[in-house]
Image 1 (tube, rainbow, N blue to C red):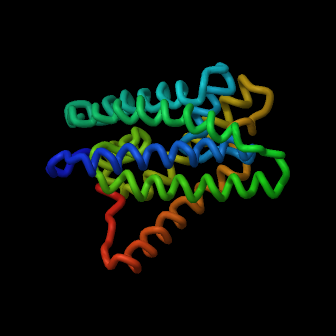
Image 2 (tube, one colour):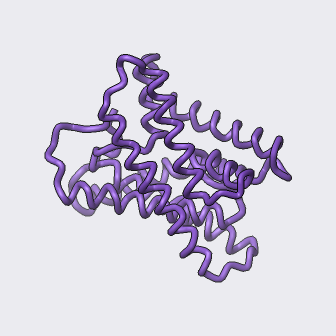
Amino acid sequence: MLFNGEELTFKRIFTFVFGLLVMSFGVAFSITSTLGTTPISSMAYALALITNLSVGMTTFIFNAGLIVVQFLILRSRFNKRRLLQLINCVVFGYFTDVAMHFVSLIPFDASAVMCFIYLVLSIFLIALGIFIYLPSNIAPLPGEGCVEAISIVTGWRFSSVKIGFDATIVALALIMCWLWYTTPFGAVYIGTVISAFFVGYTLRQISNIYTHITGKEINVVHE
């Protein structure tokens, strides 16, 4: 999943970075929607609410922590190439702050319609970002790397572990906000649940449309 032995070309690097940028705008729109951020971003956003650090900084801290978790899970099976995920921590964290800044410049009246539009935009952009960045097969975001590590050790299916992992992250974000923020629903709300169901569905539709237009199939998961 981390590397596929292919030459590291400019095209692969560009699609990797551009995909992360698109995803970061998806996260920014989900946060601004006030309907709850995406499952994998819920912990980072909960940390931002509690500590008053920027979302980009807490995204970096959370993702770096997940690399440590991978090391503890895999131990001797921890491939040094997994450290490439540190690049993701820095790039995605920085992009998230940039995206939050630009999205904040867009007039937002917090009406139900606008909140829903932002939620739909976030789901689409996150799915599109995944579609763009994963096929480059340079390094996954640490959340996906952590899911892979659990799958390697347990032998459980990647998709099954992913569901349990996301559910755990959301539960922890709820608990953190309940203990140290004004409401348990600061980072997690109805939009989080909707995103959990529809990001994967949207990704599949984007992939199907791409295949229909080009006749080519894109493998977005490298297990």
